[in-house]
Structures are given as structure tokens and as C-alpha cells.
Length: 134
Ligand code: CO
Image (cartoon, rainbow, N blue to C red):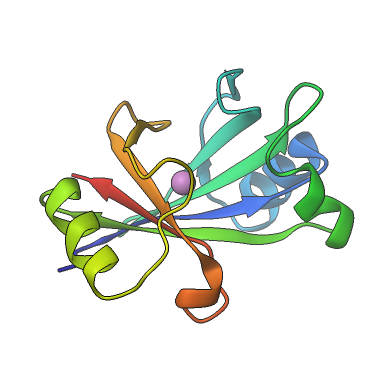
């Protein structure tokens, strides 16, 4: 069912430091920061030849990543995102298999303008898992 690894998201408390680290130390191609007020994060995309890394920095009062950074003050891997061909089909199959879909179970439009869903980390090896309809 799942296809390509679309991105790995890393939560950071200091986006500028993360950008400098990846750009200057690792020599990666890094985008301009993009504020996503609807998602409570500012995002930077790191373009790699085979996938992307996304840095997420909290934006606004109740950012969904605030708690994660409280527990991981130095930052850390927040989620992985896999591509699927049909997100509704994937969701229904996963629900039938007993996996928990977060929120109201309806796909939301993600940072790339495509429908996404999140799956409970306890059902997938302790890792918050995002599905994106490619
Ligand atoms: Co994501």
C-alpha cells in the first residue's frame, strides 16, 4: 500500500540554527521558511536527491509540536510520511485492520497542498506516521 518516503519531519526549537547546520555543515539545499499558521508550525524543506527533510518549528500559542519539544528540547524526529495512491482507500483498509487514524479521520490538506492523514504512533513502531496522497 505505501509507496515512496515523502519526507521525514524533524521538530526543532531553533529553526535558524537547524537551517545553518544542514546548509553549512551538511551542505544541503534548504528552502526559505514557510509559515503555516493553520498547522501551528513554520516549515523549512531540505531537498535531498531521494526524499525531503522538513524542519518544523512551533508557530503561535498552541502548536501541535510544542509538547513534543517539551519532551525533546534538543529536537528530534517527529514523524515520517509515506505516499499512497488513494488516501481514502488506504484509510479504510487501515481502520479495518484496527489502526487508529488521528483526528476526525478525514484527510486534511498538508504543507504540500495534498490530502494527508496521521496514524497513531503506538500502532506503527512508536512513530507518528503521515500518509500523503501523491
Ligand atoms: Co509531514
